[in-house]
Image (cartoon, rainbow, N blue to C red; front, side, top):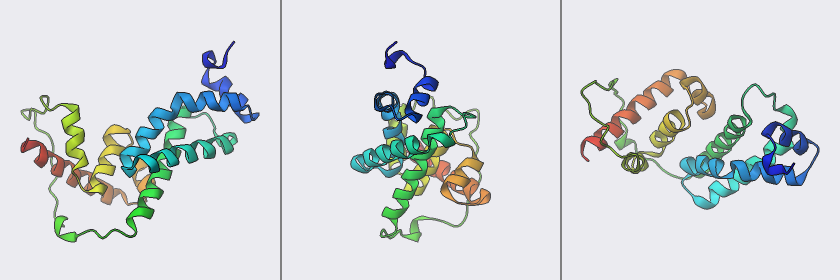
Amino acid sequence: MTLTKQSIESLLVLCQDGNQLAQLEVYNRYQNAMYNTAFRIVKNSAEAEDIMQESFITAFDKLDTFKGTATFGSWLKRIVVNNSIVQYRKAQRFTEVSENNISEETEEYTMEADDDYGSVQSRQLLEMMDQLHDNYRNILSLHFIEGYDYEEICEIMNISYANCRTMISRAKESLRKKLVTV
């Protein structure tokens, strides 16, 4: 049986034994998804590729800690997201953010049944998300695109639950305002 037809579980066993062909097969299966995940956070192709590759190295080195309680893909994605956020924060240390654009008040917004966003194409939605403040774009990407819940986002971004809810609410409102003008 060739490596391309083996299950991920059997490939991971081979990876733990240091089989480089198995590692290459795992890399080939997950590289595109992991690159896209990193790119959505850091917004730089070269950085996203570096993060993806470093994340694979970390995953292969720490494969013995993989318990199998989640899928390998979600475990690997968590590594990529964490590495991406660390890299993003490093890059942001030297970037000043004007506080004039961020208000202290927030209103909870819920979509009404008569709101029709069905006509908005996903490409337009992603373009609008790219126009959001970086923190808003990242938190919406983690929540809606990557599928993390509030508790997981709090852990990933190292923020409180209340701050997470507020940021998601503000990000949704900012995105909704952009969509209304489309």
